[in-house]
Length: 253
Image (cartoon, rainbow, N blue to C red; front, side):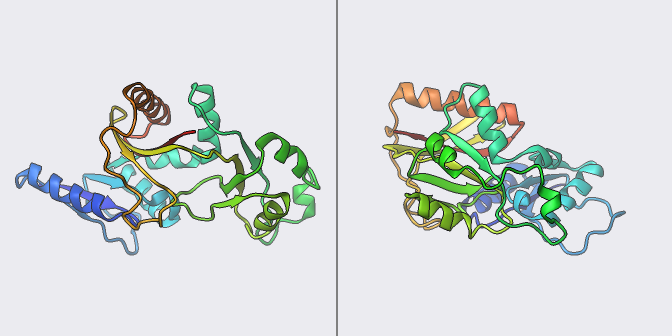
């Protein structure tokens, strides 16, 4: 019997539905379940033939475990070795080169550093940072968020230079981006499976995260021409990034 392991974070309905669907389709030849992980031996055989990963980008222990499983022949979706090259700022830059519209974005140095990093370690950094030049480029209001990770964590809107500096001073060792704010009329999240199948889901990010109120049922939410462009851009990004399962957020002003 083939075993499929599901590794997730705070997602609720998707993993349950996926486990149920895979088990039903497997008809006794395939079983799917949530993974339970403890101490991982370096010589133990993989317990799963396939692992679907939705959270290791945020948990180093999970990333190391998945690379170990891949070494032993398990299929991991998405490729755990790609994480080392993957971050939001790279993705924004890549999207622009691919012709996908992206708000103006600036990567800014960390506010604080781990012990052992001293002023001599940072002599290549511009100091003080030219915040006015950054503001002139991005504009205000703007969105400050980590250059990697997800789940809307550590994301803030800044409306004035004073708010920008105040928020930046609280970011600690996180490496941040400042991105142009777009006052959107329409916002969608798109599931992309196999770099080909795209499901467009109307979404309101202003609703509380994981409340269930963000998703809007409206089959005619996007005009056909715009929906076609969204599908094309999502496929382009997921193919370039090598993602076999991914969500992409898109908005229109």
